[in-house]
Length: 78
Image (spheres, helix red, strand yellow):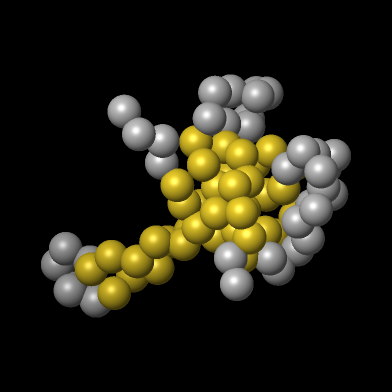
């Protein structure tokens, strides 16, 4: 099964080797047919502490690194 890749914005880089990434998804409400925005935050592994708050990044699913970390930062988006 392929690994999922998500894109989001770094909202916190205070932890060592970890960034918190907010991933936003949009979908049509089933009844109202209005576009709704929902976001979720993921903790991702950043080995070199190179990503800062506000950076657009891609994160990839991986084996569990800690209790909450199951994603690694793959690259920065432009």
